[in-house]
Image (spheres, rainbow, N blue to C red):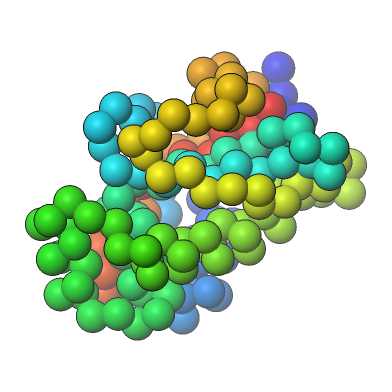
Length: 161
């Protein structure tokens, strides 16, 4: 069954990142993997105007750090130190929240209810029931391996109802 909301393809994600970051990015569709457990990750929750969860975007710690740093031109040494320490600095998480906010435009179409970013959940944490329900049984899921020029690689998953 097709998803109710559009799920962008790798070229759409690449173009969005190149435009936002002002640097090259390579995005490849890959086999999905689990985000969660004790792994550091972020899950962006997108909801309709009625508050229904319609899509999720999960990114691993590597993408969070590298994308957040690239957006603000933070030196890669900061990224490597955060990876070594197993931390997600708040300023880099906030930068990824801005990227997720803009990503919402790719999740909307004239034929679907409007989606907007509601929240960014930092794993490991307990997720709201509606987020968990979509995470466990999406209508559609697409996973990507992403390399940001000068910063390195990370992973992203988009899930839609």
